[in-house]
Image 1 (cartoon, one colour):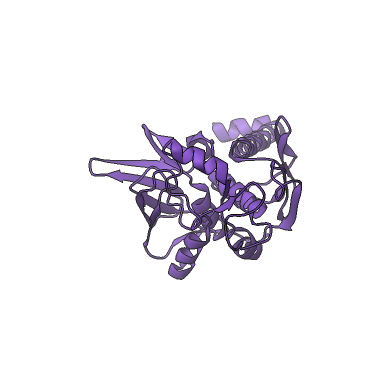
Image 2 (cartoon, helix red, strand yellow):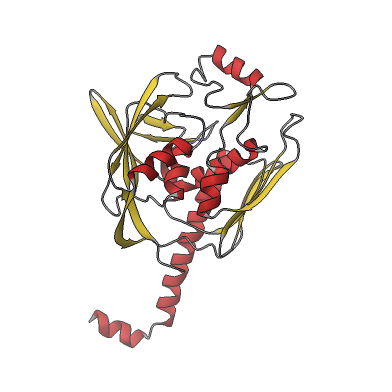
Length: 302
């Protein structure tokens, strides 16, 4: 496998959009960062600045989106932005934001992709080691499951089965190389059901949602005039999966097999992946100690 080098954005990127739930304007600034610093949110208010590392340990909620938290501050709906950063190999950046939610933009990762590609990236000399999936990993919740099988490439088999005539029993199988992600997965917009949108807005939620940033389903069709893909909804589920697993902070390969999964299962799988990684590292350490010659070991310590 060719070495993978750490990257940051070449210049500062400024974006503005609506918060999906608040409906208020959100300012997001992506700053270049030092090699090894990782992806970090910098939440700013006139009186306080809070740094929240993008890491699975910082996830505090997975209801409808992935939410990070630190010191009483939260940042939600990070997955579309993270999918773009992960796909373009950005490993280090500071994401300055003045709200508790990432702007929804057009409901996909496309605006983030275009901004980063236009600005360009800067490669460091430091390499980042991909996570090696050595054994199958899976998480199950009722009739929902998410599995990751060892593979030399990243690919997915995804199944959805919503109670809607257009979304029953859909399956998508595809390789997730960078070209496929850029052109066939990350432009897919988030989706929702009209009856749910009306209910959420009555409770003061989803106030920024509209046909400009979501695919909306009626009882038997789409409210939108056009779709970007015939099966845009299932493609967006794959986008969310990639964005959610980006909290791992490292690239990985494997065959993802999902059935009716969502943010909760995605984050559970991420935790299991890191647990396996830690177990593998511990196993290597044990093998090293068991194969060591005690006399040589003592001589080195002496």
